Image (tube, rainbow, N blue to C red; front, side, top):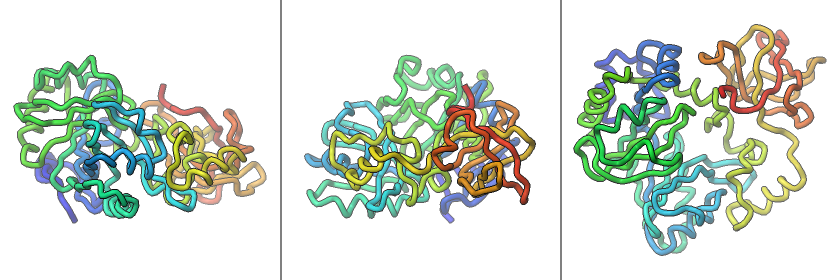
Length: 359
């Protein structure tokens, strides 16, 4: 099992460690609900160094990205980030990812930890124009500092004006005395904040500086458990749960990152699917009756006929109610529709609601 540059730090802090995507990762420190509340109301720090980073360089770097991703990367400018996905040839998704434009000929792709090798091999097979590719995942640490007080907590560590940064933009600069740090106004919590990329050797220095600077803002370390409840409250997809090799971006409600203004892997089939309409749709739902939906629980109609399955579910710490996401037959996808989650052979009533759950 791999460790991040900060694994020992988490163990010293008393984190409960679990294997996740081949890494030894902190799932919680003081408890998921308390950590979730810290991020929603103040500021928390996630070690997400298990994520993968690829650098693509050269004259044809953009062409390669355009070929393998669903979104239109030609719209990017220096310092801009884009959410996208890698469609496969059979209608599903290889992975979802972020595309960073560093300059006209240099891009960074940020991919899911469990898919690093798979994504690398997938992109490589389309690299017919000899784009320079570097997998810098093992040398790169990534911290997500998330919450409404993130900008204030971090500002003393950098000359970059954090409060003025637009969502999905980034800057390179000095951070906590370290040069060449990427500070990105991104994150997967819906609570605002930043993601910071730097070389592993600076991990302790940057971690310690962040906690010193954030002390008066109530900053705390946060585990992957709260990361999951936070993203679910926003209706953000998690690869392996809500999207995978079998789910189409159109079914998953990712039409907004699927741009048919260009040709990309399987674009013709996905366009045909969009025009014909999908049979199943990813929806959000909240429980009416008591019960917590979990991954792969059946979704049924009032008569007990199967109409879909749950992909993610939890008791929402912010809303104090059980919520979930799942694929249902399109006739059950309308907001307000009553559906039932099968929990231990009992039909538990729920209703379809609009994303995000947490407003």
